[in-house]
Length: 177
Image 1 (tube, rainbow, N blue to C red):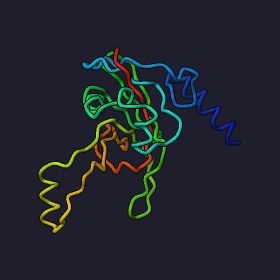
Image 2: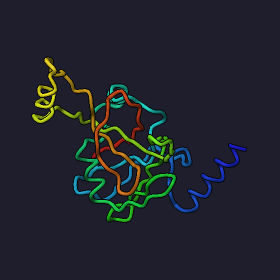
Image 3: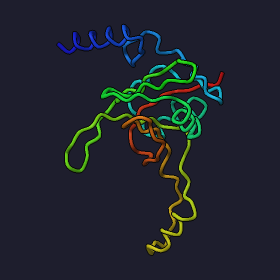
């Protein structure tokens, strides 16, 4: 039953012209969204979930998008949210789908579809955070970094925020023109 349901979802997605992870044999293609930086976004997620360290080891900082590239995607594209993820359309009409590959459970037990994609950019401690460590009586300021920036797809448009490097998130690769 699951195979039939998945196949029907793929056919429906292809019929609508969208490319979703696992539904296309063109998963190695990159899409030009007409972004000012010239960044091309891969049309499918990499298989699996990765900690930041695993992502950097496997894909490196030349394939993972930077925080700035993610912010550009958020600000320069039109985002359409659905329960399955977000359609991200560039000014030139080309688009990618960022699927909700996992679920987020709130404190009250509600489950929401959720997508999260690592960037290559670490979050450095700023002066305010260092001051907070000192004010809280910590004698040792953490050497860090322990956090990295990622693209959260919980609604449209996405948001670039940071998380613990040990969290396991999705990967969407980029390349320059």
